[in-house]
Image 1 (cartoon, rainbow, N blue to C red):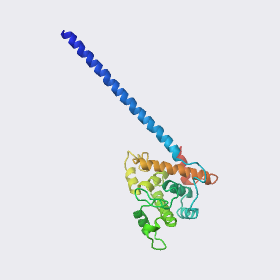
Image 2: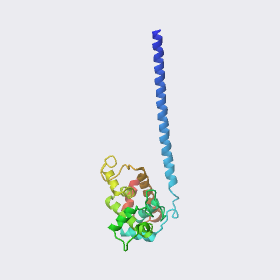
Image 3: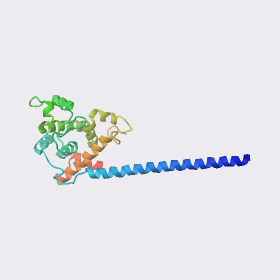
Image 4: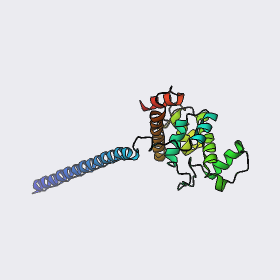
Length: 228
């Protein structure tokens, strides 16, 4: 009788262990399916996010201001157009949930600070002039130039435009995100990572649509290396 009870106990334990292993296997398969589904959705989401690659979809709006400011700050105009396309889709009245304003989505405090560093010909009203394409693009390009000056690596500079120069500096100091202190191999903010990829993609498109026959700029060469 005792032997039979032991055998039954062993059988129950073995059955419980098999059920437990099956539960773990099912859970692992469900998790794997969820990850794969998320990856597929992300890929198709990126495809849908990219508009039709035509000049009407990627316009040269405000070209007189963009070309002038880009030249004054030694920046490829295609990069400025890519930033504007990504930030506001050329809506001068755009306001983000965080409070960024205008074509190049400047925060009011950043706009005011840039005026102190680069005084305008007249005193500006931040509340109103931040939406004026003339001033928004001028100081947006100045801000972009500062990011590129601080971080010559293009993708890092684009991250700085989105997340801030100071925050990117802390990322570069973290070996988990940057093994050499200069290049970001991992971007801890998903929003910034998606933003950087979008800007670089739009930059490539603008170059292809408008300047593919002209000599490559140093920034475009960096972009090509990034995409390889």
